[in-house]
Amino acid sequence: MSYIHSFPPVSEPGADRLILGSMPGKASLAANQYYAHPRNLFWPIIETLFGIPADLAYEARCRRLAEQGVALWDVLRTCTRSSSLDSDILEASIVPQDFEGFLHAHPRIGVIFFNGAKAESVWRRHVRPALPDDFAAIPTVRLPSTSPANAAIPVSAKQNAWRAILAPV
Image (cartoon, rainbow, N blue to C red):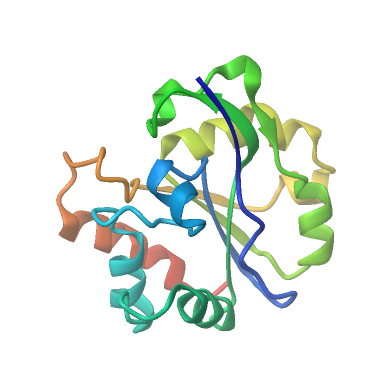
């Protein structure tokens, strides 16, 4: 079992949308980059939606995503996990991020998207109940996970679902 820590958010103060994963996998932790696994579809989907080339340098991709008003972060600050799978996260080890502080610093966030079911369940169980009512009332949308472990959903279906992040906030 490894005790692991997430990354700082990718964001600008004017962000109006927030995409939340659960916790970076081993490839991402090793690269110190969100969604670094070569088979993860996050950056290819972002390329399709926003025209940000998936092969652009990581820092440039993050900057361009933030310029689109999209913030990127994880629900978990720390946890214990034996593999890259969300199902291996020990529930008792979960420590969520400081969302009250983040949302105060990003007052235009009008919708929160979850990259998969684990991010959403951790939000509902560990984060939302502790938030002030105005932050807890921000609409949320669960999107299909871009993880290679979620291979049962075709790429085209994932891309169509992820188009939701293009809707005006």
